[in-house]
Image: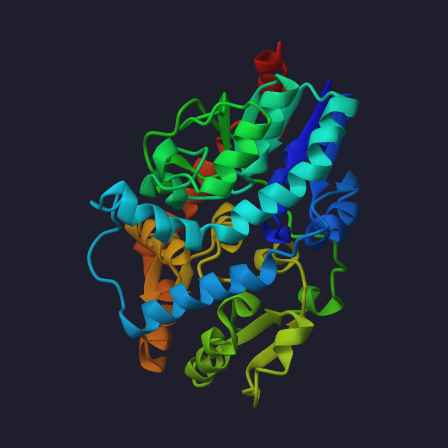
Amino acid sequence: MRVLFIPWSQPTHYMPMVTLAWALRSAGHEVRVAAQPHVVNAVKASGLTVAAVGRDYDYLPEFQQVTNELARHNRENPPVGSFPVGPPDLPAEVLKPILEAKFAPFVKTATAMASDLVPMVRAWRPDVVIANPFAMVAPLVAEIAKVPLIHHLTGPTVERMLGLFPGNSARPELWADDLRTLFERSRVEVREEYASAAVDPCPGSLQFAGIPARMPIRFVPYNGPGDIPDWLAEPVGRRRICVTWGTTTTELTGPEGFLVPAILKSLANLDVEVAVTVKASDRALLGDIPANVRVVDQLPLHLLLPHCDAIVHQGGTGTMLTAASLGLPQVLVAGIQDQLVTAAQVAGVGAGIALNAASTGADAIASAVTRVLSDDDVALAARQLQAEIAAQPTPAEVARSVERLVG
């Protein structure tokens, strides 16, 4: 069986796919990943075959602009109340131009990837396409190849619950004209749904209901390769807190959204060791380092977190699920919509505390960390979430489900 994986154009959206890709490869199938240049090195580092596609368009500048605007809006207008489900109650002619602006980087990425992917699938002839829902090109190439499309989710399905994302529950009349043209040019019908199943590493207690043909998979942490430093084996003598801001948040929201210095300052007077792991490009933004802080350059979280007692982070799904799979209580200081939703889901099951980056001060962060370290209910909820994740089907079992689906 030939399996084509198509991640969205960020390495962090590729990472959750790796264990299923490994499982399919280990079962004897031919696995290929088609990705934009931003993801190519991450694929190579995972030991899988990659085809670089969509090299004529760099999504990042426009995507940064959209994300920056959303983050700034949240800072100026902190959201209140519950997360809205379903599209806004607006006429299609009003809503569509708004969506076209928001989804422009996704549509242009799909168009650029299609120019390489369409001839590739016609020549290579995959038997199944497994793709991130953000990769709008995936339904197109799966339909052209006449093979099943399987979505691979990354966490709580914010985009699906909004009902606005093309190919993933959005009504055809809301699709951007350029995306409709891309599909119609290849004589692929424009419709709301394409996926035959959705592989989901997010435990059910954190996930929204209503995902068609949901296929749960155990989240096995993978955050890229790395070396285990000697100091991790040394006794600490006090509790250790991990602080991280992900690998893409700063470049998407700008330096003003980088709250790690404020977080470190808030923890300076606690009797804890703080291990802060950041990208090399973010390290210069840290400023003065408190005495109880150890700075670590890009140590993969799945190596660091087993040696920690809690984590403070921005609410990225990869970080959240890695911490959850290891049973860590979490403090989520979220600043953009998907991260705010992720934080609310974790807080909703009691496994952590959700803070809004736009309205949270240093005292609140320190208080939240103190609570997750001392509250038995939070610790129990974190262990229950860990057990729920461990009870999901393994990647090897899901690989066999993919085989049966392809038939």
